[in-house]
Image 1 (cartoon, rainbow, N blue to C red):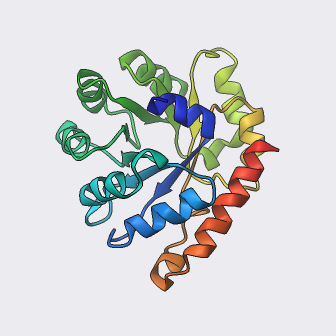
Image 2: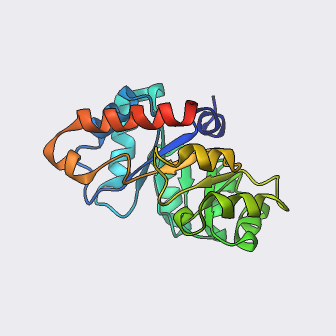
Length: 208
């Protein structure tokens, strides 16, 4: 499957946001073991680009690997060259969208207001990321989709196993889950079984 089909099928994008990515492959393996196979490594940490290449090589087709927190087109291009299969922005970044469209790579553009989300869609973002989703919650998502039902929205920020079903019921096509799925403390302690357990919990939540 191509990345957009994988995301729509999995319904979970695991956002891996660490200070450094020395253990990226182990984190990825733990997530995949728990049933989560769409992974986003954010550029806020050291070694994210290298992590993308390493995880693609180690896991092959077992994972769909993307890059997050992309603000500039040159960052998107570097990540795509390193093997990123999709690109995620935290805000409406039209130059980044254009760079991804030019490379025929899926981009999830962030936005919060209906105007931002619609502009991201019209600029070429096949999926739009509602961020921060915790601010409006499922009811806000439902309100946005009422006049704009064609938007494929992926809520991110404050999404967890506890509220996953509410967001999906409100019309989300998938969910971005970060801190509630990959705890920095678990990575630091090498407690990858905790990440696998959290992944399983999220998978159960979206499939119930």
